[in-house]
Structure formats: structure tokens, C-alpha cells
Amino acid sequence: LAGLIPAVVVLGSASPDLASYNRASRGELRLLTLPDRVRVDGGRPTESAQLAAVEVVDMRRELREGNREIFSRGLQLDMKECLDAGRQMVLFLNRRGSASHMQCRNCGLSLRCRRCEIALAYHRELDRLLCHYCGYKRIAPAKCSRCLSYRIGYYGTGTETVVEEVARLFPGVETIRWDRDAARSQKAYESLFNRFKSGKARVLVGTQMIAKGLHFPSVSLVGVVSADIGLNLPDYRASERVFQLLCQVAGRSGRGTWPGKVVIQTYQPDSYAIRAAASQDYPRFYAEEIAFRGEQSNPPFGRLIRLLFSHTNRAHCEQEAQRMSREMRDEREAWALSDVEVLGPTPAYPARLRGHYRWQLVLRGPDPRALLDKV
Image 1 (tube, rainbow, N blue to C red):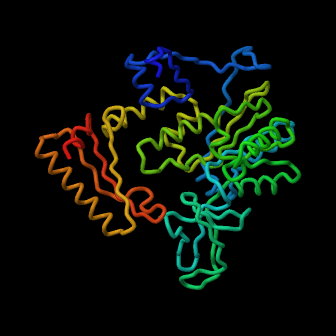
Image 2 (image 1 turned 30 degrees about the vertical axis):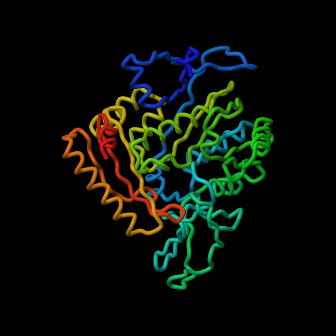
Image 3 (image 1 turned 180 degrees about the vertical axis):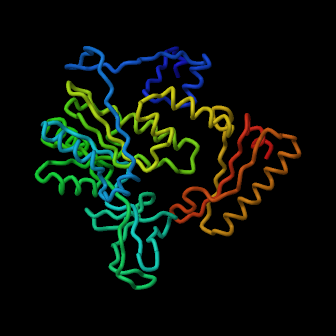
């Protein structure tokens, strides 16, 4: 559209897409940098502001030292200090509900969605187990359907659990939960926003909905309850997305006159994505991630095409994926397209979605479309 008008397009981000930044570093896009945060007073920029101080907490050590709470001891002290000073805080956890899954402690059965290969999350507010992919709901059973044991436990943490823990530690402090369950409409969104901005609520607990673009000058503390969510997904962009999210949520702290602090809790403190996010150092993350992408020939060094086949019959789905795999490889040999890799077939993630089994093939290379066009 900009080429037709013509017009200028500005891509603005503190944590830009890796491929876009790579194009800018090669001169294909013009790179402009804003190295300092600007403090805004009454809608007008006034001066340079310091980035919030960031502390990474190794939750493995907390466990070894006997702390089994969802908040580290240091974060609890910071929360108390923040509230005592009359300021506000944001607690970030990118997972809804009260528990990520429900499991029998006797036989190990994990309750899963009937239509998806995904564990059901427990929502205490609804008193229901819920699939976050297809919306399937069911009542939480009192006993295991396999071994009839009553030893059923809830595992993992969600935003509802965080709100309950804040209420236990700091009785009387008003807390807002801001996630897709709480903000289902524009009216609900505006109500939550205004309650927190007015200062009536002191604590904001939420998912990635609160990480981007919100300006709350009274927030001096951000706590990331678990930075590991999403880090180990089978996606070459997983580290990039976690880095971007942590940088964005860290930017909610210290936007007013008080210095800000960010506490990142993690079981993987040595991850380069988390280390770079802690220092809010995009060039450092870019250097490590681009080297890894180069080793794997992943974008921007190559292109990927994913072919996804889904069917209600598991065997037919796998057989069709295998047939297409053989055809792809035969065509690659026939046309001598040696620079195109055919990866798979493998079960997709998730392997079953809304009643359909899913298998995938991935074509990788400088121009994988050349092979696709031959088939």
C-alpha cells in the first residue's frame, strides 16, 4: 500500500522481529535507534529516564532452600516494600486459570481434552476444567476414572492462583486480574484499565494482555512469576517470543518519578533469552539468536513452508502425510533440488485439535517453493 501511495512505513519496536532487524542491519531497511527511554509528563516528553533494574531469581535455589511458594522470598519482600510505599505493582504470568493440569497421584492419569491432545486447565472461578484450544468444559471429578482413587491433585499455576496468593499475603489489598477470561469485552477492558489507573487497585495480575503499550506511572515493581512458559515449545521462534514478552513487560515498571524494579523468576536462569531480556539488551540477544538460526538454516537464512494434514482418522492422517513425504522426496530427486530439505512427517503440535489428528511436513531451503510448485 505504501508503494502505491507512496508513503513511508515505520516499524517501531523495542524488541523488533529478528528478520526485520536482519534486513535493517544489511541496509535493506533504514535503521533508526532510540537508545534512551523518554519520560513522559502530562503527555509531553521531558527527559531521559533510566530503565528499571532487573533481578533474575533462580527458582531451583528457592526450592532447594525450602521455599515452595509461587513467589520467591526476595519478590515477597519487594512486594511488601512497594505496597508500604503506596505504589502499584504488576505481576505477570502468561497462563490463565488456577492450575495447568489435573492428575491422579495414584495411577498418574492426566485429564485431557476429548477433542485435543492437551491437558485440561482447572479454573477455580468457574469450578470447571477447560481446554484453552477448543473451549471444551467439564466438571472436575472427585475421583480418578481409571483407578477410582480420590488422590487427585492440581499442578501448575495460573493467574487465578496468583490473585489468591496475593490476597493471602496482603489481606485487604485490592487486586485486579486481567486476562482473556476477565476482559471479554471492550467495556470490561476499559473498566479494568480505569480501576487500576485511578489507583483503587494496587496490584495488577495478568497475561500478555498487560505486557504491551500500557502506561501506568505509579507502577514501580513488575514481577514475572514464571519466565519459562513458552521457552521450550517446538518452534524456532520460541526464544525470540519469550525475549520480546519479557522486555515488553519489564517496560511497564519505572515509567513515573520512582525508580522501577523487575523481578524475573525462572528455572532456566542460564537461557540466553532470559539473560538478554534481564539486561534489556537487544543486540546481545540478536547476536546469539542469529548465530543459532544460521546453524539451523532457519529464517532469515532460509525459508520454511509447513504442510499440515488433518483428519478425524489417526491412521489415515499419518498415511497421507507419509505418502506426501515420499512424493516430495521423489520430486526433489527428479528435479535435483538438493538445496531443499524435506523434514518429517511428524505429529504437529498439538497432535490433535478439535477432533482432528494433525501431521506435518516442513520444507526448508533458500527457495522451498520451487519444490512445492513441482508437486
